[in-house]
Image 1 (cartoon, rainbow, N blue to C red):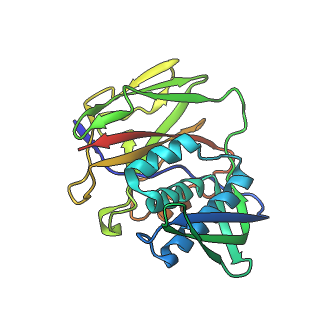
Image 2 (tube, rainbow, N blue to C red; image 1 turned 90 degrees about the vertical axis):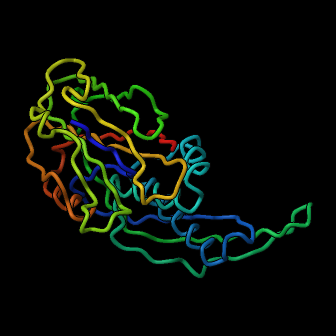
Amino acid sequence: MRKIIFLIVIIFYSYPSLAEIVTGEGEYTHTEDVSVSEGCMIAKQKAKLDATQKVSGQTISSEELEKCTEIDGVSNCHRNHFFLSSFNADITGLQEIGKPKKTTETLSNGETVYICNTKIEADVVPINQITDPNFDFNVNFNRYNFESRDNLEIEIGITKPMYLNIFQLLPYLDPKDYQAKKLFPNKLETNNYLKSNKTKLPTNGMYRVQIPKNIDKKNVVDYLVFIASKEKIEFLNEYTTINDLKKSYLGLKNKVKFKYQQYTIVK
């Protein structure tokens, strides 16, 4: 069996607790190849990311952001990273503090750069995971840089027996094509209860990475989400939208633990 791993930007969602009001700030510097309105949009995305990271405690490393920027462009990277952070903390309300501050600077080479600074106040809800420190797992791939149609192999290390679900999200797809799809378990790998200290996936068939034909990019960064639970949870195989998948976790407070991994695909 071949499982095709498409372009994904993902992470997992569980049930929220009380919201926390925090401020976030984002600044973006650009040249004329980016419009002023788009520059301020990116600054606002960075402000949202700043707010969610203050509550969730999970930050995007500069190395990860730099790698993504080189492949996917600044605008998409900040949008994607904010999307990922929303699975750790959700913004339920937001207002801008004043108007975005727009300035220009002239560099020593005579080039003009544009700067947009945005501040927001947001109601941010942290997403709860299993708090048992002895219930944990790690994930490793056979490699982290692939050519399109290479095989992906996954090694899962666990501290205790657990049920595992793996999802891929495809936010660029039309909802009619399903934006969230389950990778594991599947028809050939029906048992998702892991008992061995280490498990290699796939146990049957192949996971093959591929950039969808309708995506006009030479390189992409993909993410997989790994969802562990102590009890068996029945998820759908497909969800129409990503929000539908997120809603499916409401009520699962402290019943799941999740991690995500990224890898690069080159055409």
